Image (cartoon, rainbow, N blue to C red):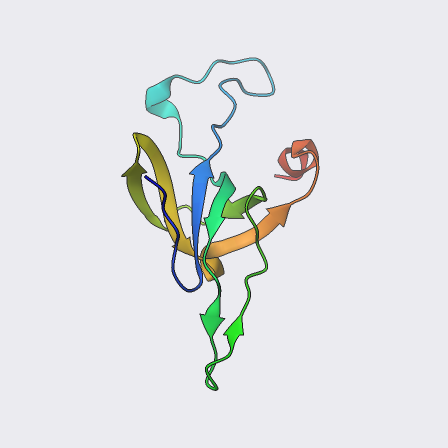
Length: 105
């Protein structure tokens, strides 16, 4: 089955977090938080403004993004768990390596 989001909605696949800390400690599944990073799978055509014109989205399929902890609705499509959220729920697009991001946190 194919799925195409409407308006300014985005379909995101979560990217699993590391299973070890920087110090080498293995994190058990029960202690892990849901990752807040994902890969954009599909995007809608955009939101309409007051005049009816469609404004395209800034994200595209394949982008790695950060989103809020409680963002989106979890759905299962073809056995795969995905998130559907509005573009405004996305905090930003990750460019290149995420190692610098982790060091800053």
